[in-house]
Image 1 (tube, rainbow over the protein chains, first blue to last red):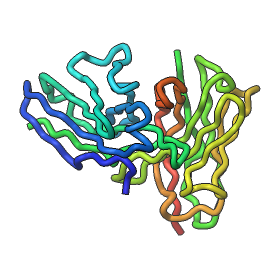
Image 2: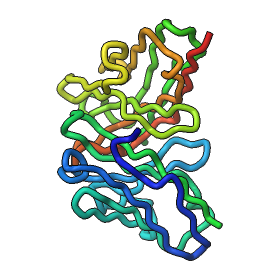
Image 3: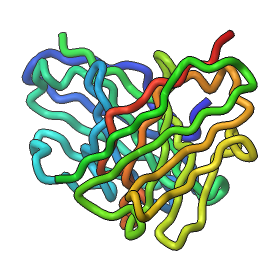
Length: 110
Length: 119
């Protein structure tokens, strides 16, 4: 049972827009920043979004993050086959005094 | 170029001990927060342990008292000492650099090392 809740799976056709939600509480998302990671099959995760909305250099602007209250979302526009991966949200939790992840969402490109 | 290279993963019997190593290059571990994150087969990511630049540490409840994170600044290497291993500790263990801005996020990951706990 993860502290942050994500849908197990989402899907979309090439070119479409999909969103992945991440729901937490006042001790994590409600008080701290949210970050997103992409994990391609068989590889280590990589940073996709940090500080709710910021993209590291090299991440396409098709990826964007947002946050409202105790929930956050990752949006992917212009879906491409190479976007098929697992996506994880992460924040800090003051009750646990450490980082926490969502359970992960598998994105399938139809 | 930033690099993190983990080693030490192995097949180990329940109750055994193992030490993972993470050799860093391109930056100094003493000036950064460093973490271990694990991923059980087919499962999600779990934030395990962090060593901060001041040397203080954090361990998740699931490993507290059994795992210890440490660093050797002369070797620019971070370690995870794992004792009293259980079957549920079977996972790929990733070494990671934590950026302390924006309430701690991982800006660089190693490639991972597999630990299998089984008799």
